[in-house]
Length: 117
Image 1: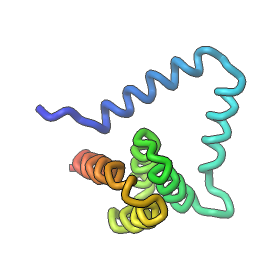
Image 2: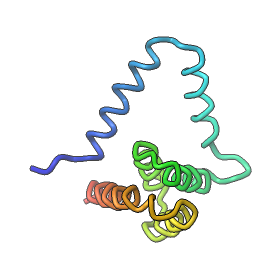
Image 3: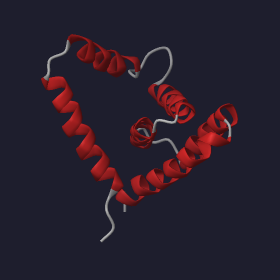
Image 4: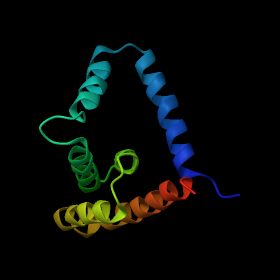
């Protein structure tokens, strides 16, 4: 049976975020809070903010961040076409070094879609 990369990622993320927050470090807690609040509905819709987060994560080559924002985009109902168009801009800005991260992003999106079946 193939490992479910979505479940594995979410389980690991939840476990490690919990461990980090248990230390009760003020700076870590404030960064987490700032991150949560930054992606709330505002002048820009949450969908737009998540696409921006995804794009920046690709350019910065943070696979964990890419997975997180892909999942949020998926939950918000963005289509594959919308997500791919957004990621294509990131590829343009970031250059060919982004391609390996783009491959993993496509793989993760497929895993998200497979969960719906």
